[in-house]
Length: 156
Image (cartoon, rainbow, N blue to C red; front, side, top):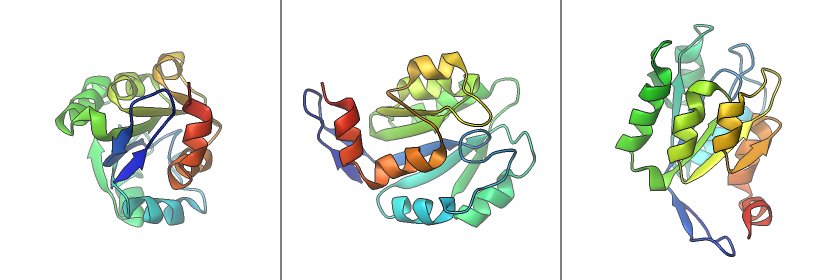
């Protein structure tokens, strides 16, 4: 569990990290060097799940490499699938990271929503639902590894 006290807001207690894959965790379906080590550290604090429509067909390999669970969503109803998944986990204990339109509802439900504005871009729907926008997955994961960064960004 990761507990964060943000001045002017209620304390956040995070138990689960939900990650979109394409454009968020990976670029063109491939993991960058340094992601695995960050995920390993975060797994000591919370459960980590990857939710993906698996556009590039690399989801199972990425999940295995990271030692995390994968949930493949519908390419047609992925938005609802992701929202249903987070709802089943009790959204008040979830941090969600995404970049696409099909992440918007998941981001809206999460206690903490981080959007990636990276090489694959970011949908405006996802951007409008986020608490924080960052340029890449490294910055997003580092917010969880160094939670004082969250306090500096989100304090009222």
